[in-house]
Image 1 (cartoon, rainbow, N blue to C red):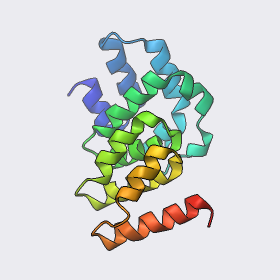
Image 2: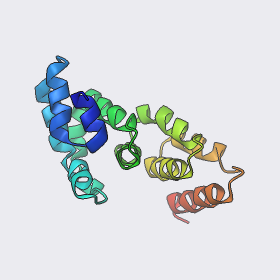
Image 3: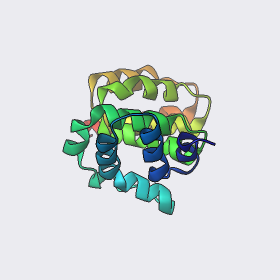
Length: 158
């Protein structure tokens, strides 16, 4: 198992940085991104929901390519807890580039994945996220429809 696979298996940030080193990427920028994402990695380590409100979004915005890559690697994990954190992180950061992966998750056959993506989209407040949420407002699954209605109502401040 290589270091990226170890990261995707465990969420261990040191395995991620080891992979970055051996792949020839800019270690300094990834170290800064990992430090900025510390609340997420701490949550994975302790099995708790990360404190997304503790993210330094200004720092992470300066490291957008590295952050997007880390989230993509997390999103590619076979582990539900790591993939869930990636989906939640997409919503917490709200980058436009996360629209496509979230749209893919909304179309998943796995209900928890769909519900996580709906919550992430509802927290983003952008035009694309609104379009995606509107596209599933009449979903055949009553729980999906109810969650879309609930979150879009909250989002509108009603």
